[in-house]
Length: 90
Image (cartoon, rainbow, N blue to C red; front, side, top):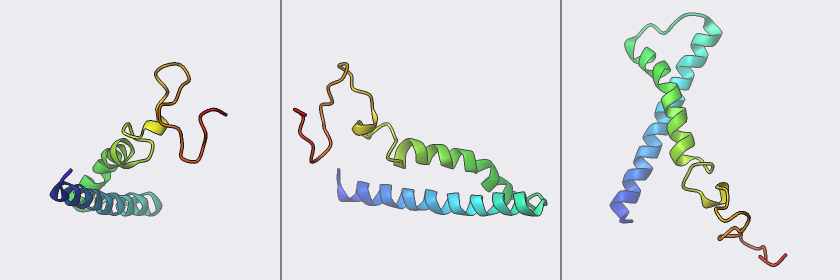
């Protein structure tokens, strides 16, 4: 993977994190204050909150689909990539 691709992914992750924090602030203030968001971008933030949580859980979380340690073994019990520091014979 090239450096530009890595920097792009890092920038995207940072932008998603900022959007998540801002939408979470609006949702919590609405929940505690009882007043609905007044501006259209606040409504957009509240509506985007489930999408942002899904994107984080799917692509950036350690439980995402790309992490092989979190997947079930395909051959019925043999893990092809054991955790570091463990011996496979024990």
